[in-house]
Amino acid sequence: MKMVFPCFLLFVFLSCEKNPTESSTNVPEVTTAEVSAITHTSAQCGGTISSDGGATVTARGVCWCTGQTPTVSDDKTTDGTGAGSFTSNITGLTEGTTYYVRAYATNSVGTSYGSAMSFTSIPYETVTDVDGNSYRIIQIGNQWWMTENLKVTHYRNGSAIPNVTGNSDWINLTTGAYCNYDNDGSNADTYGSIYNWYVVNDRRKIAPEGWHVPSDSEWQTLVDYLGGSSVAGGKLKETGTSHWISPNTGATNESGFSALPGGYRYYHGTYISMGYDTHFWSSTERTSSGAWSRSLGYSYLVVSRLYYYKQSGFSVRCVRD
Image (tube, rainbow, N blue to C red; front, top):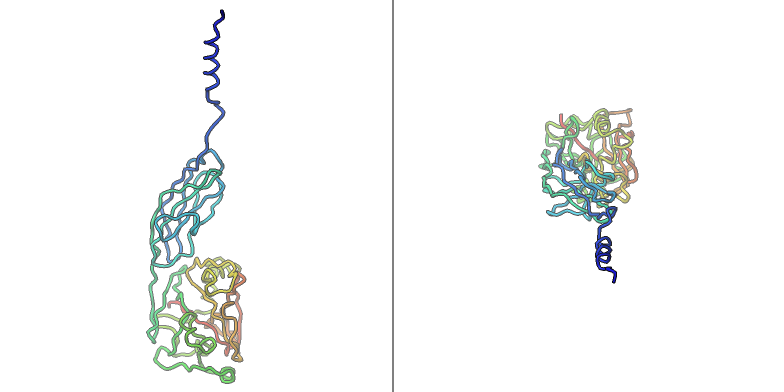
């Protein structure tokens, strides 16, 4: 009688051995970098993916929110693919607010996260005008700018700026005047007031003490610092469509300037374009009838350098002396 039992055991043993070519996959291993370069509206973070888990990392970046456990369903960046280290730019923050951020990495198995890091965006300083209105200010490059439009109704010496509402009166002005969009004072709370250029040029001065309406060259310094006229508009505009009409192309507000679409008043008195664009006066005269300005729009990134009749009604931002 032949012995078959040992052969059976050998067969069982061999059939149970693990195939050395087989391997399991897992979610990636990722750590969160320290938060740095914190400003009023932005910060820098990132992470390191030490292992892809056996499957290609198809998305990576950081996610953040005001809760303690941010996920990719919250605000996030997308910073390439694959393992290794990456840097992320966080934008669109609210000043003086505590956020939590963590790195994430996604492969075919799922998404993993690094540890959450907390940080607080820098609160704004303020300046006050002669009427007692307070404005947030921010440093952009070597300049300090207001982040809100002026809404003062008096010159620095206390003299009243005439509030001219009628179209026929507005078009004939050769001295300073202001108004509010659609002659509705509540619009000034959000968008500031609208001024003709004669106010800007008045020797009694419209800006708070220690501040002034920027010249054409000072506007250009700001634009150049933000990458030039072709892209700076997006960096100056408030994000989202709470005030700007969709699509608010390219708006990141990474400068913190927070430009709003306050519209403007034609030199002949008609109000136009709230939600669509905004115009800011410079203090620089171009001709006896016109002066330089800057314009931003809802559908483009460009900062336009334009000149208009001095009777036109535009918004005013101020820069520190």
